[in-house]
Image (tube, rainbow, N blue to C red; front, side, top):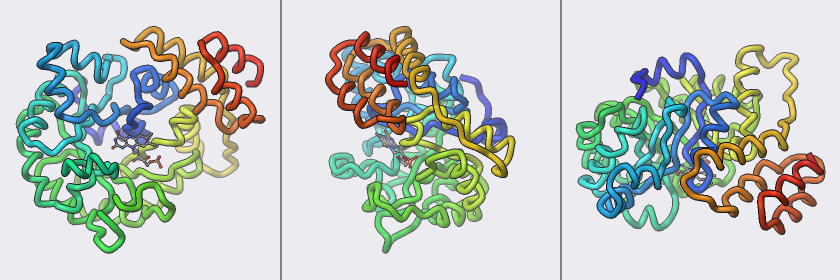
Amino acid sequence: MQGESVRKILEKNKLILAPMEAVNCVAFRLLCKHYGAGWVYSPMIYADSIVALEKELGEKEAVQKLVTPLKEESPFSIQIGGSNPEKMKIATEIFSKYCDFIDINFGCPVTNILGCKAGGYFVKHPDNFKKVIPGMIEASKVPVTAKIRIGWDENSINAVEVCKQLEGLGIESVSIHGRTVKQMYRSGHRWDIIKQCKEAVQIPIVANGNVTNAHSVITCLGQTKADGIMIARAAQDNPFIFTEGNRILKEGPQNFKEQEPDRKKIFLEFLALYKKHEVRYHFSEIRDHALWFSKGGAGSARVRNLLLKTENEEELIQLFEKYF
Ligand SMILES: Cc1cc2nc3c(=O)[nH]c(=O)nc-3n(C[C@H](O)[C@H](O)[C@H](O)COP(=O)(O)O)c2cc1C
C-alpha cells in the first residue's frame, strides 16, 4: 500500500498495536490508530483458512470477511500463521495486495497451533524457517516481517540465533515477545534478551511484552534499545495508552503524570467505528470491548457485572453514561 520501510515508519512513531485474535477487528484497529498507534496489525489468520475461504467466496469477499482491511489503517500488517509452505505462499500472495506488510507468526503458544507445527513450534525447530520464508517473500508484494518469542523454554532460549537466521532469509524486521513459548503469559519476561537481539542484527527489532503504561514505554525502550514497541493487552483495555506513550516520548518521563482515559468517549468512538466499518454485527463482540474498556475505572467491578447482563447497544451506552 504505502511502501515506506519499517525503519521510516518507526522513526515517525515507535508505538505499534500488536496482533490480537478476537480483539483486533477493523474498528479497534482504527480506534488505536486514532489514539496514536503508528502501525496496526490484524489478528493471526491461519493460512489454511484464507486458502479455503477464497475457493468458496472468491478473493475479495474472503479477505473482507477475515480481515476487512481499510486504506485509512495504513501502515497495516496482516499476520499469517501456518506451517504448510504452499498454503502460506498462497495466503501471502492474496493478503499482500491488501496491506503494507505481511507478518509471520512464529510465536503462538496455543496447543492446537503447536500441534500443527505452526506458531511457536518454529522457534523449537528453526530448520523449518527456511521451508516457509523464501516462498512467502517471493510471493509477497510487500516486505515480510516476523514475530517470535525468545525461545521454546528457559533451557533453550535462542532468539539471537533465530533473529540472525531470519535476517539472513530476508525478513525485514522482527518483533519479539520477551517470553518463551512454554512460559505462555507467566511472569518473568526477558527484555534483556531483546537487547541482545538488537545488538546482533542490522534489521529493526521491535520489543513486546509487559508494556503496561506510558512509563514502561520509556523503560522498555531504555532496556532493550529496540526500534519500536508493540503493545497488546494494555491497548486492549485502553487505546489511550498510545496517546500517553507518544506524549511521554516527546515530553520525557520527568514530571510526567499519566492521564486517565475517557472510557465513555473511547467506547462510543469504538461503537461508531464498528457500525460504520464491520462487515458483521455481533453484539457479544461489542460487549467484549465494552468490558475491556471499562477496566480500571472507579467501581469497575460493579459496572462489569452490569455490563455482562446487557443485551443491546442502548443498555451498554446507558451504563457508560451513568458510570464513566
Ligand atoms: C487476546 C490476545 C490475542 C492474541 N493474539 C495474537 C495473535 O493473533 N498473533 C500474535 O502474534 N500474538 C497474539 N497475541 C500475543 C500479543 O500480540 C503479545 O505478543 C502478548 O500479549 C504480549 O504483549 P503484551 O504484554 O503487551 O500483552 C495475543 C494476545 C492476546 C492477549
